[in-house]
Length: 433
Image 1 (cartoon, rainbow, N blue to C red):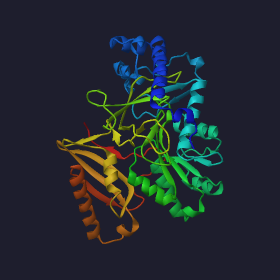
Image 2 (image 1 turned 120 degrees about the vertical axis):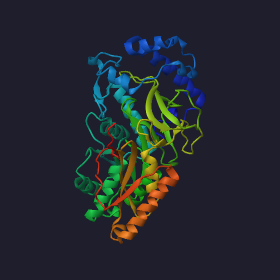
Image 3 (image 1 turned 180 degrees about the vertical axis):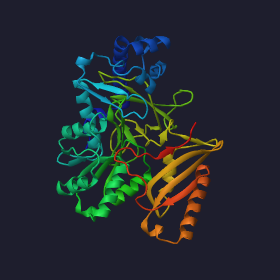
Image 4 (image 1 turned 60 degrees about the vertical axis):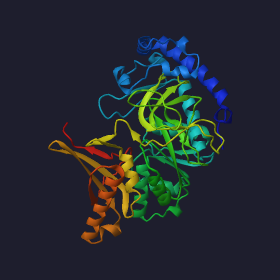
């Protein structure tokens, strides 16, 4: 089912005409009301009147996360605070969080986008949505909550954590949809196994997972363990929260970007040059319907590519590949670049290994070293020491052959790696640089 057929199936020419109209209005708005944007546009020698086609978007300067932090807390708002209905903020790993605001219309737009998102993922009116994303300043919980209500589904606002209670309510309330991070979905599956709760006792049919990169192999594990269709979702607080793009349940082949609200680009992360459809690079978004907190050419640091080929679901908006990593979590070890998600994809293909791992980066003298700790299943762990050592060596060789890095692999017993209710912390950097 397509929630908003008029816009989601709009012909490309009509869509680009709508985008241009909304883009020009947005550029005029930020230029007139946000000193940061006026200064940035003037420095780039571009004026709102310069935007005469969608291609002119490239004339506009980028916005970075540091710009948001430099204008903390409300410097990028287009309206005074008394006209802002709600404030959210990113968790922020360092320094102060990035703050975003919503007008009443922004909240309604977000609700509609999330209703689209859930519908695209296969959720229908009458479904019971167990929302295990965090509520509060994080946009995940409330974004899903409002979208599910807009769609007409029943919401269980359980938030994250309290895993045993999650499973009890999942069974007792007849939850049909689970929303959380993919790593927490695996934690729930693991806990179900410990409690003796078979997946057949649940009514779950769909899981919508995001907030962290995850591989196709992890999708297959989640689907097998929970007996569901696992759907990938993408969003970020700076753009709107969840609701930027999502896979359709019909194809599960790329995430449909809602282009009537967001204009996506792929750029070369080093040069800033725009790249054509099909080439991998850094994902950039411009919002074209937000009131309180629009962003112009926001650099997400996420690595993806765009695909304009028609999808069999009937939606005409471009699709983005699942995010494979970030330009700022890319590891460089002795001149070799790689992402944690690449390690995950490799590990998930090896029998006997569990989908729980961490990568430790250390410095010994002047050289960087990598250690990958990965859980094995009960059967492998009870095997002879020689068998474990042989498996470690095999995994080390595969990492070397496929990724080109030398890593020490340490197999650890089940339930050893820390579990996370939100985003999983896959990399522990112990270097003192």
